[in-house]
Image (cartoon, rainbow over all chains, first blue to last red; front, top):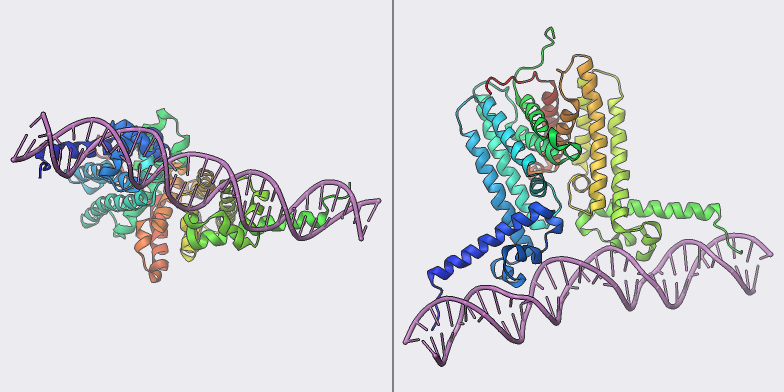
Length: 208
Length: 208
DNA sequence: ACAAGAAATGAATTCGAATTCATTTCATTG
DNA sequence: CAATGAAATGAATTCGAATTCATTTCTTGT
């Protein structure tokens, strides 16, 4: 036996794998899933097309893993906000705002991650990531209920509703029409809606 | 000239066209867009594959028209509810509930109509239909604001949020897991969330 | 009944991107 | 440095469903 996979090679392999995953992110952020061909990704990663298949069994799995990686990062960001100090309401508002802001700043990528038609494996990964986001929000809503900031409600359903509202606002028809300068305003209004959606005080027609 | 398209033939043509559109609905309701091939649709409609192309220029346009037809009908249903008697809050709750109930009763079809990856033309049609649904809800929200049932808010954004919450609740991870007996409960809870979302008193940020 | 044209048919073709694989390049070890 | 086997390459192959089109069937008006 005149060959053994040495540690340095191992790292190079890992490196190459990572570079391919990053290339997916870059290409998808540029042309979306629709335009992202394996050959394009390979070129962006600086490897040959066939090499991709030495690291990933299929296009679908490669893209799904890339999505999971990215979504996982965003979930961490949101979780960090959720774990910060403050009232549940404030943390929820921040979590939603941060999500919205990051999305509008990389809108093409966000659209791909959230809503663009893609391989079934990608869709499956997307469902998982939505659950992960929803779990974070659900925790915040439960915090708020526990502290009486929010009225008793089905936190699971409410969290799903917030995710839906966020994604619809960010990638739906509303966002399509929004001009660039409105991006900040849009994310502010979406945040306001989300807060209102779970917040306690029922509306009283005070003076106004 | 020994042939002229007579009225009877005209009707037969129209009939056939309609039957093809209905076949799309049936097939998609059964196997979703993914499994819906032109050949399958043709068979379901009782025509040959090639015939489909005498009525529609491409698969994408055929499917998009089928979706638009179906969505248009649902929008009418919702609009009818919205136009009924009662407070804005009651009508909004009814509109949302009816939408949710009808969706859970034909879940496969609803999923395809609302969220399943499909041809770009279908996606475009979907965006339009969402706008149509959102417009109905926006009208209701504006009614509620005018009558002081709801607090002042961006009705456009709120309507989009409701659509998002509805679709996420109905076709998202939440719904995937829900068992059949929970369908009614689910639609009730989603309705509750939506109503609260627009009727709660706005949260006022204490910081920043 | 027949000619003229329209509509329907479905087998054959097209097409484009994913995947493969024979060949080449690179890394390791004695 | 030679031998061995892994990894990379990218041109060639595969594949499956949309689309086409030569042929057949149906309609109409004389």
